[in-house]
Amino acid sequence: MQIFTPLSVTIALFWVFGGIFITEAYPATASDVCSQLAAIATGSTVTAADSAEYDKLRKLHWSETAWKAPSCIFEPSDSNTLADAIRIASSNNVTFAVRSGGHSPFSDWANVDGGVLISLSAINAISYNPTNETVRVGTGNQWGRVYEQLAGYDRVVVGGRVPDVGFGLLTGGGLSHHSSLYGFASDNVISYEVVLSNGTKKTVSPTSDPEHFWALKAGGTNFGIISYVTLKTFPQGKAWGGIILYSIEYVDEIMAAIAEYQAVGQLDHKSAILPYVSFNNFNLIVISFSYLDAVERPEVFDKFYKIPSLSDHTKVHDNFGESIAEVIDKVYPRWTWGSTTFYLDNSTYVQVARLCQNISRTDEFQAIEGATMVLVPQPVSRAMVQQSVASGEHPMNLRDREQIWFSINLGWQFASDDARMEQFVIDTLSSIERLTKSKGLFDEYVFFNNAHKTQDPLRSYGQNAFRKMKRISRNVDPAQVYQSQLAGGFKLGGS
Image (cartoon, rainbow, N blue to C red; front, side):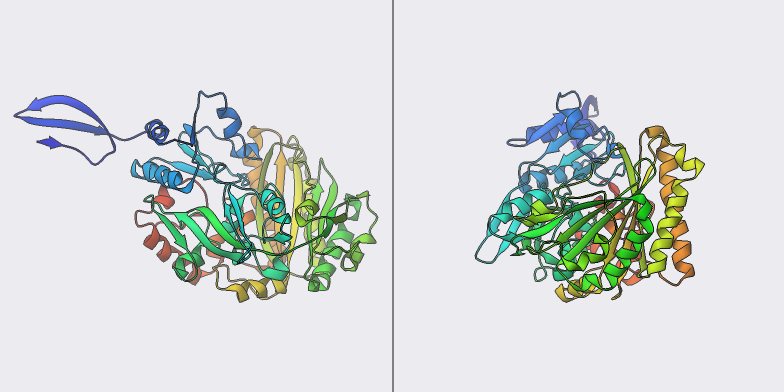
């Protein structure tokens, strides 16, 4: 008789006692899993830590704060191989991470020390169906490539506002320049192709499994690893857009202009802005403008044109992707961010910016090498919320009211200052929330895609939504592998 323990890697110790052959089992290591992945890697790639390509691949994340040292990096060539990889990692009880675009700056979000990093970069097919005007997209893509592919059909999807953002955007709702017209990015998903924690594949749609579909729209990686999505597409020809740069001395005027635009300008649903207000070591305001038609200097942005600018890089572009192609260099290598929500109010927008500027001027902040604070005030219109609700249910439970998803981004130079800068984000958000609460403007909602690692965006959706997500998680992931073995934040917890 042979006695085996249920562990996946065994080392036979040839001891025979009374005719019993005993096999002693030892837990699998990440290295063991890497070896198993290499055995199934036909057409896929396993990059070991001693490989020449390893360092480059582990550092593809835009912020050095997310650079880790996995035991190996596995790039599955298709969803079947991805499913095999998930099955192998989960059954061997090894920690693993999954990376799409790698846009999160947080350590252990889409990378892992000593575990297995699964990169989706090779799952990057884009297939447009002209009959039903949908597109099937692999989640190893970045949005800029999708826009480029669809431009030839004069079509567009509701996706990222920066071209190098990946498809993790869809797991947090996803704010888009098209949101006033069509809702948030995840509102325009027709179906998800996901890999469950046991390695099985599942196509999820509103008709096949409405609860699972609901949870995937803004629930992070708690409900499956998304390999492909089928998205609605919309007509899109030429578009006006680009960036305008302003001196930081006009910060009050810019914040007031954002409030006025949100109150009046966003009623023109073809318009959108993405502002960056940078203090200390950068001291510059950059606004990315978008207008979804071939109109030179649309009147909806008149308030911004009246503010003296340093340079203007806006024009009519042949397609939407080109209109957002110009991006700002990150300047410093290490970044973090966090987000808070409050309602439209002109004076409060100005006050919040001044509050943040004062924090950036403190001796404590300025003592940190390269310390830079970038405010990203993201105005959300009632039309965005209404279009989202009209498209179907999702977990976010947004209030039908003009609001701003206000992100604080911090950049700096050295790893030795990581803890201090993370604390600055927490403290700055707390200061903003004290102000907005005192004025009755605070909203509990935390934008998933810009939430700090100490925040809890899933709970901000409300108690009922959170309980529903926990129940769905137990249904689709009974062993709770994606809660315990999968790296990444914003988990649902075990209780």
